[in-house]
Amino acid sequence: MPLVARTTKPDKVRELQRTLYRAAKADPERRFHALYDKVLRRDVLERAWESVRANHGAAGIDQQTIADVEQYGVDRLLDELAADLGDGRWRPLPARRVFIPKPGREELRPLSIPAVRDRVVQAALKSVIEPIFEADMLECSFGFRPRRSAHDALQVVVDETWKGARWIAESDVANCFEAIPHSGLMTAIEERISDRHVLKLLRAMLRAGVMEDAAVRRSISGTPQGGVISPCLCNVYLHRLDRQWAARGRGVLLRYADDLLAICKTRREAESALEALTVILAEMGLELKQAKTRIVHLREGGEGVDFLGFHHRYVRGHTARSRHLTFLVRWPSRQAMGHARQRIREITARSRLRVPVEEIVRDLNRFLRGWAGYFRYGNSAQFFDKITLHALRRLAGFIAQRHKRRKRYGWWVVAHQTHRLGLIDLNGIIVPPRPTRSRRQGS
Image (tube, rainbow, N blue to C red; front, top):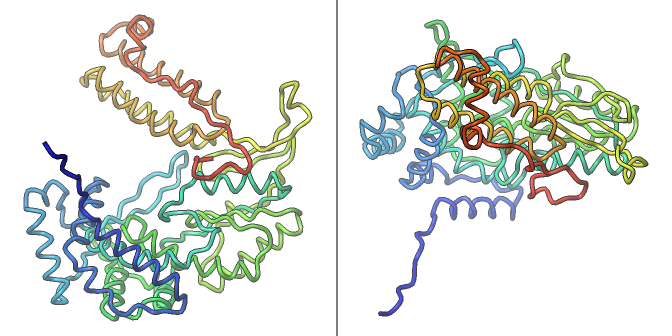
């Protein structure tokens, strides 16, 4: 029987994105004027729906959930969106404003939740315009970019300190997503896009506003955090900072969305870096968050710096072969450890006593795999031991409460069941950071 060659369906959306990227890369002065028809393409809208569905987001002010859309009919929804966009009838609803706690802090973060329909349109538009602006992005930018990760940014810290740059100016942009001026953002977008329909669509998204306490509030600034397209627009605007830094900054700038590090070789250089950041951001209508702005000298016995969930500190080796060396290490920050403990407490809370133990273990494993998958790229062994022990304690306490027995009964069950009831072991998965290691390996 003759073998039939397998054929894979071509990914036309990816091919469109590659074409746009190559065109933008080949001509840095080009302004794209024929994009709107691509936003309306059925395959682009379908890909947008898939990404929205995968994120399992909450409902907007219309109370329509992902499940409601599936019941209504995905094809029907996409047909309606394509028709409304094609006829110029589509108008975004105001986003639903909620406040969520920041991990390990009492401070609340404002989150704006657009309607599901509006998130699909945002995702479609993002898939078309992002490749164009991605062609312009600089090496210092890592956050919310294709094929770049937090571990890529963390590797830069290791590499630069290995080269002798151990003065760190750290800060972030105050209230960045809410403070970006619409006029400046649209000017930045118009440097690359001249399609008036796309520009009109973007302005409508920015002016949609948020609903809070039953009142709609609209502003002349902000790309609300929570929107699908907001991280892309944030990068487009902060790309101006990256460009200005190349001419006016000191040291190596490292930017992950609105989190900033300037890695310098002297204190004077670090002070100049902070001054340059302050001036450039002021010209953009933004400012540094003073509570997080400081200069840190990474040295043996000195303080460390928190960045992207890790605490970075300069230490001396503690073995006979490494005692003559000093180097940068990193482990989960205090906030990251607090967040992990809090999440484990939530999973094993008394309110879940009716939930089967097998499901509790499954939820714990799901969280621990994700948490450890990120923090394994560091010097995190003893911190993993602490989190594992905390999970075991909470699981033992949960079992004891569920059976109305003393806690030692829970410990007995955990100790005598196969593989601790299936709770995963985090030992042996650590990957210590090394200078000059390929960033694609994570660290």
